[in-house]
Amino acid sequence: MNILFIGDIVGHGGRAAVQKLVPELRREFNLSMVIANAENIAAGAGLTNSCLKDLRKSVDFFTAGDHVWDQKDFEKEIPGIHDIVRPANLSHLQPGVGMKIVRNPVAGEIAVIALQGKVFMRDSACCPFETAEKLLKEIPGNVKTILVDFHAEATSEKIAMGYFLDGKVTAVIGTHTHVQTNDAKILANGTAYLTDAGMVGAEYSVLGRKVEDVLFKFRTGMPRRLPVAEGPVRLDGCVINYDHNTGKALSITPISRITEV
Image 1 (cartoon, rainbow, N blue to C red):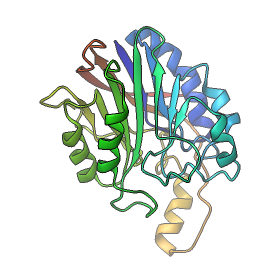
Image 2: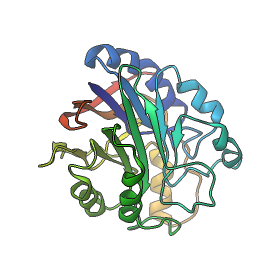
Image 3: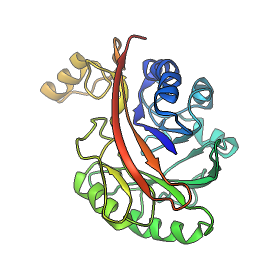
């Protein structure tokens, strides 16, 4: 079976690109399921249920990261949203959950886990390695397919997580840095790994934001709004082919497509 995982979707242009390109990708790769990191879909920072509705015809399930609470009302919305996970290693007092077992539309079930890194990240997260160990013990034995979105800054922390979970999960896919890395591989014990899936955002931008505003902030050190950039949008992600009977990954193929929106 083939699952498409899509990197961080940025703003309205990112949502439009997903709506346009994913139907084509479903046909091209014979996809059974599409999962996307959606933590930047609302004006480039955070989520709203309204924005998620725009994507539900294209995407089957969503993950989130450190910007999950950037939109002030989302903490009230997330308890009623059944197709999303936020980082599991946040405080248990925060709304939402970090793992869900969902039905693959074609066959079987898949456990989707979101984790947040600690290195160079916000201080609110607990140890992602301990959290991963705990969650794996909670997954029923008949659920063989497990996908982990590790939302982290440091490549070393992401790579370490890949080896830590090798043979225990189907895939460990990194998000957060918005730049697709060139290290997709199947690890020794059958786990697909990619340090960062990339983003769905403007091709000519700084991580999806307008270049001139980011340059101003870097050069002056002064605070400045960083609006979402417009223009052609690049959709980054990867296709994971796996055996649903064993949960082992067979291949991982990075993809990157550009479209006008």
